[in-house]
Image (cartoon, helix red, strand yellow):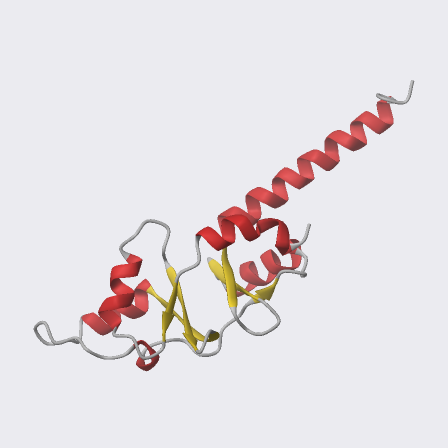
Length: 146
């Protein structure tokens, strides 16, 4: 199964913000359900990501209502990402090895087109495995070949 099969769900989870935006704008985005990772862009291309942990860490250092730092001051720049033509099992393996709960999907021009959550990838992989098991059982038992 390729990542592209996950794109409809991954696109729903996509949240993007400009690098020069203020942290409070990202915090507002993350207040929505299932928005745990925001992709940071400059001119449409991904330059980093920011998580809820990044936001909370920075806000805890702000004084009063003056938290005006920009996202690019706290974002993670070295980002693990995937492409739509990669195998989902390979992507899930990398996520598992690196302890990642979510991963951006980029097109060839480095523009974000979605975010895959570990849970969604695992559900898709398990569903595919169950389908393969059923096909194999049907083949062995001769169902559909009479």
